[in-house]
Image 1 (cartoon, rainbow, N blue to C red):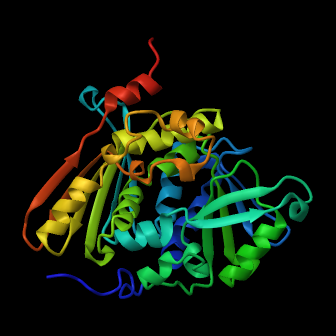
Image 2 (image 1 turned 135 degrees about the horizontal axis):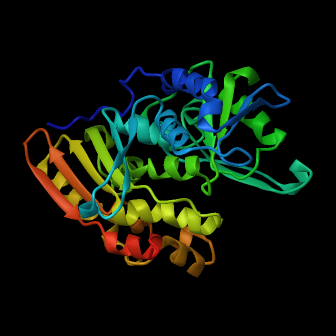
Length: 335
């Protein structure tokens, strides 16, 4: 039996309200987490999780859960020698479509020219619950979801604070008073930034399933795991490591409804090994295409390994495989 309702329409959930207690805890624990918190000239909260602040993995775990709109769990665990890496992130959600695509996905393009900023041009992709207030992406029409909370939080993977013109746009598009907006800044070169990006392993699988045309309303549960690399001080290398963690080390289990052919096809088509670019580091590929994401084969943006279980039939299919040997060559130095 197939679920034909819009993926998120029946949820009645507010990702911003669900995330709000987590945001308040993050602000309250800022010192312990290595964060710096201030209010900008508008009155919005700005959380520095790795620019001037040291940040931490613990902060990244909390930010990962905030990004999922309070509908997911992100945990750290130790891996054994058989797993090929010492530290892993586990992610799970019983509302995976809303948590990952309706909240966590970095889909809101925010930019300002150097003329508008009075200095350097600014660009970032916004992720997290506030996306669902502004609904600037066509994805929200497909999800059948919009949040109407009077508070909002957005995560930006940037190495400097957004200019006032961008913050004004956020407030206007989200319909928020400044004091109700929290912006969390997480450069990928930081501990928190690396952690919250690797925590997207389940989201990457959901986005790939959407790109493949799988009915999002038929995805009812999800869990994933990926190795957590050390951040690099080089921006491209840092981004490469977080992508490689998912592309070559990410493992995801999706629970779906519907017919077996669709579930089997998803297990076969989803893994990253279906890409012509598979087998090389993301940083190498990115440099080769002259830093143009749109020149990279879209099939690459997927976890390495996937299981798909159909609760209607009880059957499970498996596709792909991790390549921990590649990750060790990229990440590990001889002692």
